[in-house]
Image (cartoon, rainbow, N blue to C red; front, side, top):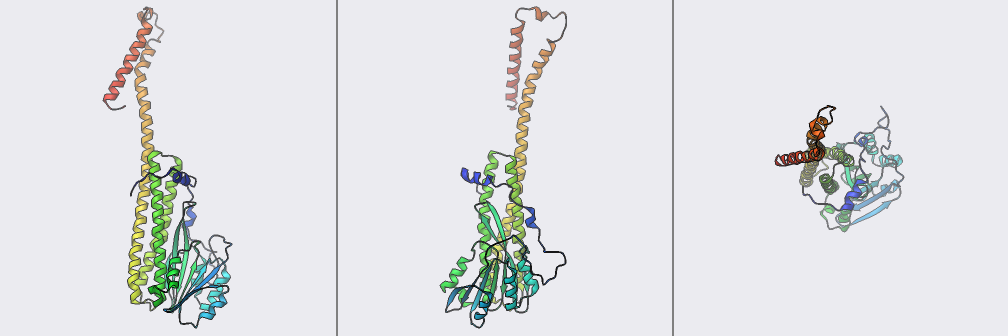
Length: 375
């Protein structure tokens, strides 16, 4: 990894937010034990955002984006011979999910997985549609924190419905290419749109990994100059974030592998080639996360070594001072005895001679320590 000295304001900004990671993010949530599979219950953080529904309607000749105010409007586009991408932003309103179920007759277990946004990435195939759960990853530059949200995809022959819990617009370039009508996607079926969406998710992984790489470089540089409890907290928090990243990215390998090997009629041979490319990118992302995990473990070891070396240096200085004062303490002890006859005590120059002798002993010891390279 390339080491560069970061600007002071970057380090200062990161120091303000140590140890922000919570292990509760690693644990799947549930509404209650043995709840009915028909129960649609939103599980994750509370939101007040208004749910937004957009429809991109396209074919080889035309493409347009429509903002949907009510799910009933979706029925107006059923008969059109176009590919339809319905994107639902936020899923905390169970009523909207239930209305989608009424229109498209989605299996209740799928609806439950959509509403429970702590699901593991996975793929499930049904008679006429495929359900995929992914994790979208972003990096908050304000809080220097990794943000991971669920993204669900339902794929029919002419339909793609996505449920987006992410506050960022990570698919703007996909939408832009569709609306420009100059991209290959407008000439293909919904399986290619599904590939484009998954590809955008995986590309975002590398953007986040670059941010984490810079974050690690800053910590390494800081570790070179100082090792304190605050730094240990940040390294430990980063290590847990990387574990969470691995938990979110690793299952995607199984998802894409299943798409490649399945005999699903929705996926054409043309799209399989592109899925292989996404699979390679996913493996690359997983390997990068594994490397980061090893590096953070190495940083923890380096921190402990730095603290240990600092302690050893302190003990070395104290030991040298003790070694210098041992002979001086011995002389003071001898001449501090209460013997009646000590001839040196009656001599006129005993006191200055004692000091001269002590200084000579000290100088000799320092020279010996220098030659031994103990100083």
